[in-house]
Image 1 (cartoon, rainbow, N blue to C red):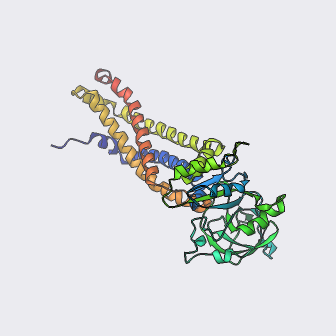
Image 2 (image 1 turned 45 degrees about the vertical axis):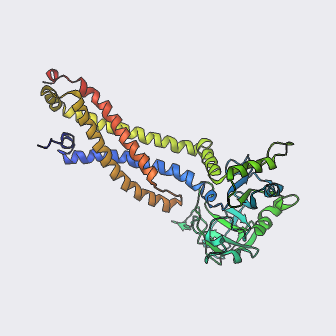
Image 3 (image 1 turned 120 degrees about the vertical axis):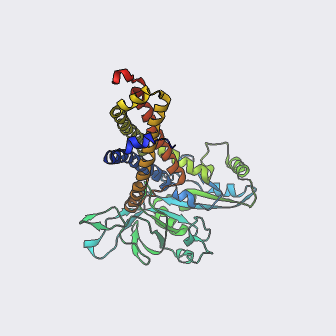
Length: 409
């Protein structure tokens, strides 16, 4: 004879009340999902560019804890690294987040957008430094030939470009298209192609230009001496079969002069991504805010679930006392309550997952930030939901385990 699913019956005998219970847990799940999504968007968006580096090792200044910082290093370090055994090639990338100003030259003054700062990346068009099909000479979508022409650029299709809404100027670049002619720092520039990268917490948009165009527009007017004397990032490619860790040690040894403090450091792609994430989490208020938001989401869920389970235990205390009088021990009653907490956790998580999926899509479309769900993130949040419901159930058990059938009746 099948046993009565007491936990399920306790929760579902009143369907409306059960729906409200699930709604409460769903609210907590959605809150945690959104906070986790913003936290991961912070990390993922600010490492999008790192993921595109087509190299084995990366050279940056040790003072450049985040790519958005302006901390170049001497170009001669590239030649020093290139002399190390096992190094196939070394290339420079130029990056500007502060002085790149895109000016709308639309002749219709009524629809002209304000001048906006934009991230500008300077690369050697023939070196395929970023893993974008538009920079791959072997790809049919390649724009390398066009980018070689001075004064040309590629624009990010995922840059913010909503334009004007409700009569108010939005933080956008307007409708950028191929053949758009505009101005960058007062100099004419023509967009000849596009690529996909995305926005982050420091840049609403990105454009890629050739090394020559970058130095001419963004370094030469502001640099005393040779504009190419300093570089922002160095990309190192190793010979096939070269041990990456050994090559890193040899490069660091070659760069060590012993005269002054080191002005360049060497990282693998994963190491520099972890370094960037650590900076945003540990050294910025926004990293703390999202971490605290996740904690608050968990705490809110804990309180909601405890109120649900403790209220349910109080409402059914005579029934539980009857079971005690019939000989059922505290272990059985505790298992019933824990089953209820698990049912609420699963039901609330499933509903919260689908609501959050839609919220992620909406937030990604409106902000341009990568709000993504991965199996690891979904699994971790499911375990957090189960944990908060089980902990709430354990706390709610205290009054039940102390209940004496004689007192109840």
